[in-house]
Length: 148
Ligand code: HEM
Image (cartoon, rainbow, N blue to C red; front, side, top):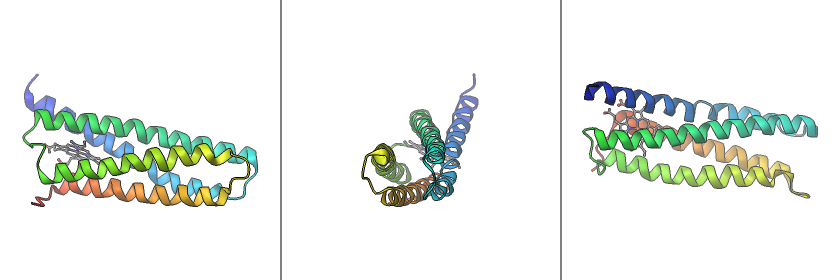
């Protein structure tokens, strides 16, 4: 297969995985909002939806990183290009957020005596920060600003 076709396919896969790692995030906040003060059975349903969203975002994120690295190896952009380095830096930050902010907080949801309101507040805040970081990376990737 021609190089251009292969590179094009990987760019497309990269963009699709970017869509899948940002899109489901906007569902997270409205679902978290509906979790306030509901019965336990309903709570379980919303929590299951939140976990699915986080799993989709996580898998898509892995494809995003993998295809991004392939683009760097195969493509014209060296790794030390400023917008690539900035994206990787922001990505490391958001990895921390996804692992700590979501998984850790969700695991504590059923602990006895835990303040659910506080957990939901933190979950909501983490979602907004994560969405913000994703949009910064999207901007860096699309605009490709030469920062230095
Ligand atoms: C390890 C992290 C990443 C690496 C190494 C990487 C690498 C790249 C490279 C080299 C290109 C240029 C393709 C080209 O035009 O020739 C690209 C394009 C793109 N990336 Fe990434 N990427 C990464 C993460 C991300 C993330 C986190 C997002 C979204 C939030 C993203 C979204 C995009 C989009 C939308 C394009 C197409 C933009 C365009 O070419 O006009 N990438 N990526």
